[in-house]
Image (cartoon, rainbow, N blue to C red; front, side):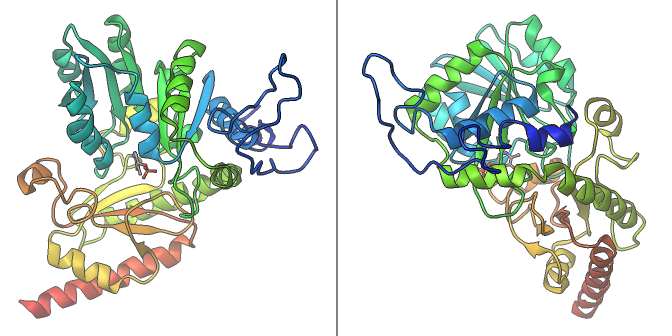
Length: 387
Ligand SMILES: *Cc1c(COP(=O)(O)O)cnc(C)c1O
């Protein structure tokens, strides 16, 4: 089956028990045991619930893995995966991982005596140089946020395998529609399903997929033992969002490509980051390992004043943290997602005071272009008047 068909006719399609066209919300915390000698499929809902199981099987199929797991948030998923490791272990992590992942690793996991080296994973030699005898895993996020740096997943996986390390990939930005890390050699895929998979800015959720049963069993033990499971109503919402993942991404990605090209030629824009642009550093690797460029792009308007005036003038996109929704979302990394990073470190990573991130939604792209154009022109006028 092709991806579009899998979205609708996989495990989250009809309910096997009743034929219901959407998986029912089994709002039950416990399950009657009809025979004490023959335990039923389900006993207690932290350990398993049919609604959650349907979502977990659906994401496993889409990512091409053996087992899927649904968690209460992307961070619940990510932090649970890191519970695979023990005191004394060492991890290699992409230097521009999601801020919440960085905070978890440096402020919480570090207390358990698990060390992390952050490297630029787009440079394989830096990853190789960071490997120590106690290294256990490489953790990647590609494309990264907000300058969309692309890491060669297959090359990192080969390096990891040669040293007996696990490779974990945060696939939030592209989803299995465009990128399937397990096919490229990864062992574990993590998602913030709050973003494109949920897709409607109405649910916080996380997903994990394990390549094989052995890793799946370890992750199941952690999921049940730590208990950060996704509630059944939210499981249903994620399955509801998942059904239209391809249709939404087809439209948003086409619009993002058009917007990126338009912004790149705009006199008031200094730089555009979008992997679909041939000018982007990661363009070729991205073309090799993913079938699309996704719906997130960033652009630099040169100064904090310009950025602020643009946020004041723009009418269509909502201004918010988060991404991957039906509505376009503008965010300001320097003061939102990367506010806690020292200014010089931000500058080194291209996260300047003029950088704006745009997650493209389903609005008509011509309306988005017109709105951004009026906002850029009016921002320039405001800045000129202030001088
Ligand atoms: C949002 C996000 C997360 C965290 O997910 P939550 O659902 O907010 O907990 C992790 N990784 C990436 C790339 C994200 O964008």
